[in-house]
Image (cartoon, rainbow, N blue to C red; front, side):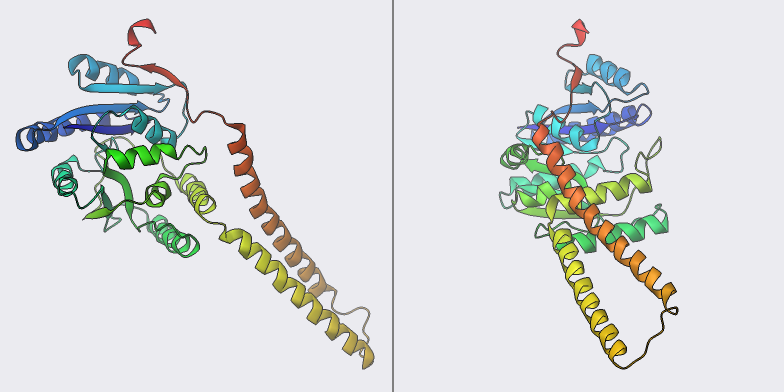
Length: 317
């Protein structure tokens, strides 16, 4: 039984040795208790520090370590897909290199899959300790909104950390879309999932690469990728404003018929109405543009990532 650990990395020079030490310890315990062999796949997402150098050194010291290095930064979603594609294991786990995803949960997760009742053991945080309050608030709002808009369930607090069976991994790899939102893809492909809850864990080293703006753009990616509800909302807003305009026309006609004429007053409110209607039109056009942009990127059929180096071609770099 081979278990693959896929670890996307971006500027994780400090965290990577600490992660490897802890993961190797857990792997040793699981070798003794479950007879499981391991491979560690580090996906260097165009890091600007010494992450690739650390991965090379770990590979030289331990043949179980493999790595894939991108030619530039393509994003975590591309790193996840590349790692899953490179994984050879009967079971595949995804973890972050900062140890916010505790490898110590892997034995219990494997037991869940070996029972035959589940195809995936996933994790979710029960707390957001250490996060800025405003970031936690918007994160919870995102999960509420997307679960109301989308038919694909996305669990609040879900992490990318999960252990999957080979059939589920193969199903995820069949989803080759360019605009990826893995949390949604995992839910979309189906398969029975058991959730493991744990409290938030701080990074062991380095700084998070996810600021508020990046998370905001990522949330839009998830909503647009797994729901067409914004298009329906835009159409509904358009209908409501047409009705409001019709009512306004009737009011003006009635006022004119009753002789209530005042050619000067009311220009301030008219200006506000024009600005409001224009803003709504731009908002709806923006929604259409977002979907059109995703379609534009998909039809280009560009690769999700470009590999510069792996442990197999290291000698000819």
